[in-house]
Length: 345
Image 1 (cartoon, one colour):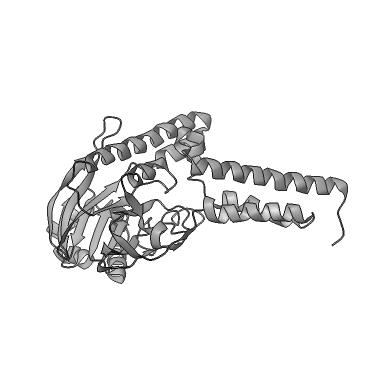
Image 2 (cartoon, rainbow, N blue to C red):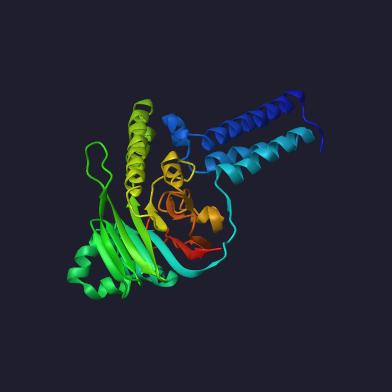
């Protein structure tokens, strides 16, 4: 390849260097506490092509330059593909007393508006066949259980069930001590659900939660610019507050193996999730999943999943044999499915 003119070389060098500095800045801040500033927190929710595109272009430009610049751009691209985009390379645990667990933001409101919406939900659950299923955004399931019991059973099968507001807990194992907990924000009531399941001779806490959506804050930032950034900051603060309240309530439960699952509306890099992880929980997809595990975004214009905001978190005493995400047809969220080992070796 002929060496290009001096101005073109300098331009390529500047582009490669700018991308490398940007990637380093982003990596550092996402690894620390991005919620300390609204703009940094916002970066966690940007579609990954925003980062991947410039890194790929920089790599292409680096071929007009020397080996140092090629290596720098290659490292930048690798950091984007791994640390920034959240690549998981997990390793399965060993153990026994296996249960299959599934969390699903089912968006039953939208399913009710589609001709085959409930059928699609039922097929998604049937495909993965979890022993324990928790659902969020499933307000319609209460009326369905009362007035359309056959349709309700088509989705949850013959599992034991507990329903409260938007939440469903359905288990092949006996459940007890079910009830709501409270994580209000801005003087608005907001709930989560806690149950105890009895599986393989053990009692296990199951908590399912749906933190406040980032949609309002993201839209405000998109359409109102700097003014909207203030709304976004309040939105982030609300999720932080909810997570902190949940951590406080978890401390009052009996010391049992624990599963916390649901739509946390935050990636694992977020302080929202880290507050829960710091109680001794770990993310199942990070532990035993392979790939990115994105669960949300496929209903947007790009048509691809972009964010991993649905999570299953488990106590360290619980093993994770496998973790995966499900299909995108039935809901705006893919479900997360994990094979758990109640006795971890």
